[in-house]
Length: 145
Image (cartoon, rainbow, N blue to C red; front, top):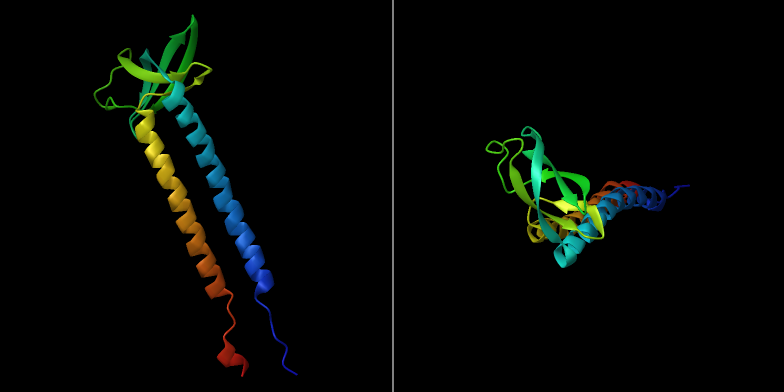
């Protein structure tokens, strides 16, 4: 008697793993998108002072700025190139008035475009993962005959 092996359990497990992994990155992307949309809609420009720079980390600049007498900090790959920036230089940042911890030293619109692109990339990766899962778990019907 020839027992048929079903690929369904493997497909379910692998699909859940792929969905969980890509879903996690989707949630992170969604959080970034919400923060950027808040900056685009309600953001206020303010001067900030460069406090440190990490040019080996994608040219990241660390900065501080003041809102209503309270100091806040932020970091990012700013418009000012890291190599040209000096500690103490002033840069222009955008922050959220309802949550000043949410700040950017680049154009929020520009960064939002990249976040939107990430959604399409995640969707494409999910489709590719499903195709691979179905190919790997397919049963060769010629071998069963």
